[in-house]
Image (cartoon, rainbow, N blue to C red):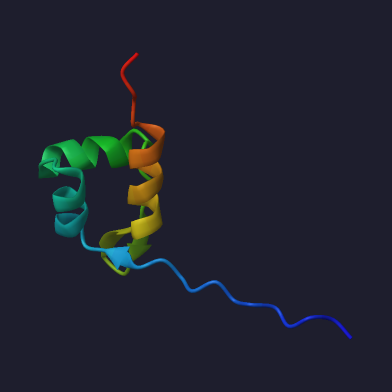
Length: 67
């Protein structure tokens, strides 16, 4: 018998205003990040959403430590 597979719950999808608040950027700044491909987004109907895990990834990859 195979072991049961544990399903990973889907990431929460944030409104753009929530993503802006999390990143401390304005609307234009967030759209620049999205349009340049630095932040992935999901189209839900006529609206864009950003996965909370995408915000975490972006912050982790762009965090720099001083020397």
